[in-house]
Length: 305
Image 1 (spheres, one colour):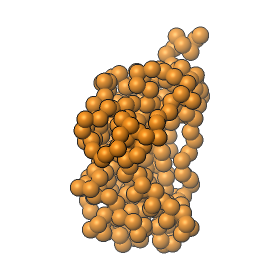
Image 2 (cartoon, helix red, strand yellow):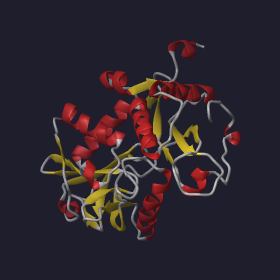
Image 3 (cartoon, rainbow, N blue to C red):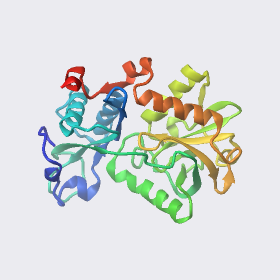
Image 4 (cartoon, rainbow, N blue to C red):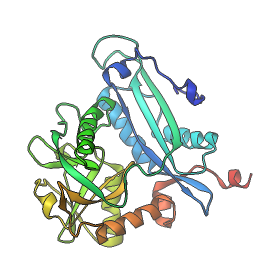
């Protein structure tokens, strides 16, 4: 927290802080995966997550005294200090820390905190039942969706709560133009005629790290290209397969939308292939992607000790 490693119980902020009162902060969610055979925690795509965090900071006029390289090393050190030997979830948060009243972004003090804790699956990976939400996705000209702004997740909370209370597992949100945007906190992919289709960045989506991972894996490993375009609501009802993805959700197949079965109403073959491939990659079991995307928390010297 602000340059110091401290016990979790000391990692608190004032109830009068600007970030708490007005949601003037941004964050990332980063997963680390335990490889039992290698006795190693691999933090997945750290660099890309911190590059996005700094872009979010720029939108919120937050200046951190850290480079991407600094943030990577701090993250690895935190996992080592916690002696974590299992799947973990890191949450870096940059926020306005002043205890003042008044809505603005300028002339405020910027704070930073990073936590690391055990975490398993965030959603059901065996097949999710989704409903199209009555809540619209926030617009870039209101609260930019390309930034992970803490206050903006109230939008997601409205949609997720409505979905749960209506008997669904997750919400699918539309833009104000009625096009498919994303889940409450996940990007979405449809499989139509053997091709991956996903909303374009202009549909008020978060430019997801997992989304980018899926696009690259699908093309490189399965020979399937992705089409980024506007998607109408009714395409959700005729798609061969659908899955949601994100750092928290990972790759979660969707088996129904608004009580309409997706395909045969079960996890489809392409979704299953991508899901299996993804979990091999994030646990460092694929040599090429381990070198490209996985940061090892424990050195061989540390493991020997």
